[in-house]
Image 1 (cartoon, rainbow over the protein chains, first blue to last red):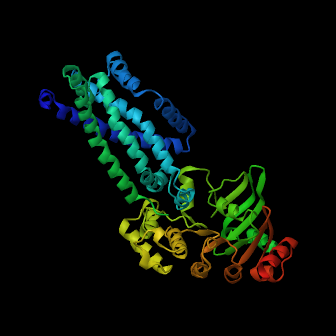
Image 2: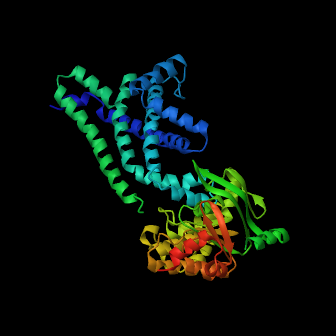
Image 3: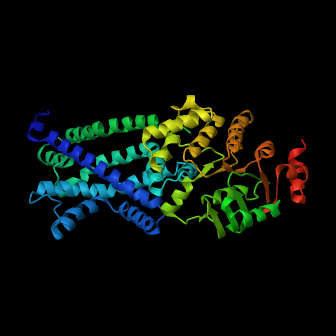
Length: 222
Length: 258
């Protein structure tokens, strides 16, 4: 019953999914933190940019962003992200870029809600001992904000893992693309769907449970 | 004693550490500070009292610019208070502040709370900062709690750590914004004792408080505020035994007779 699986590189595809998710997660955590810092910062121009970015990017369908990365950035503007002439590498990198830009908006908002849980007095006390705005953010506000954002960030990460399937639209050989091939070639729709669903549950369920545990463990006691 | 402080300003200008000149501030329509003139000499302990809403906490917070002012000037050790940025941060390091709600950094241990500013602002090395932190924690009587987190300490202990954290910066002046108002009654004294010791050691202090006992025993001068104005300034003896303004008489009659 599972014989047909030998004809497909499912393991390789799942590995690609994991790589897409991990790289985009790291990228969006960094860019999302920068965006959150802009949105709570004292410079009106940066605040405006952060707000505009989040409100534009999170409201565009991910498919549009990924397709634009491929058709717009690569095929029209010739951006290859250092991938040379290798389309697989270029498309993989474009997918990571698209997922990162998209997910950052959600990371930013999860972090900003975390920042709002930090009492004003914490930042005031930090300013009162002479820390600069950046130092207050880096040493006091963000560490506490991250601790209370672990659970909402876990949601964002789970959504990201599932969103990697959109990369199939530009031909990245991840799990959903292999699923499409299998469904087209085999008469095993239910079984294939169940297998792919299971793959994602195996990826996301432990992630959610683990981060839920971490969230409790690192919670700031007040 | 308003006359005396004016005279002091003329004679010994170099001895003045904190000088506020016609400071005004509004919160929306509320004129919370009205033409405040106040001079604090080096080594002086000034207690600010008054009914709630009189602007005394706001006054305290303007001195390190946690609250901005609308007009007037504030100088600290001869330097006007900078608007923003590095210069302001530098000045704040010289002005210690103790808050009503302690505001210890919740995700850091007691020791880290007291070393952070030394390392990040004063650029001391970690070992030296920890030595000083432990000495200060010992001085305020919480050395045994150094490795704990703030939430594991009683209110009185937290406030004493907060005092140590401010002292670690070697401030020129210490601001206390109702430091005992959030404490259980039995913990008030342990904090006041630390403050009294500090006053005896010659620290310049501006203390907003409702603790009249502390005002009597430790203050050089009492500043009485009401409705955004400084109504009366006097030595504690004069103020408590013979207040001149009706507003102060009224205030004292309400708090001293029960």
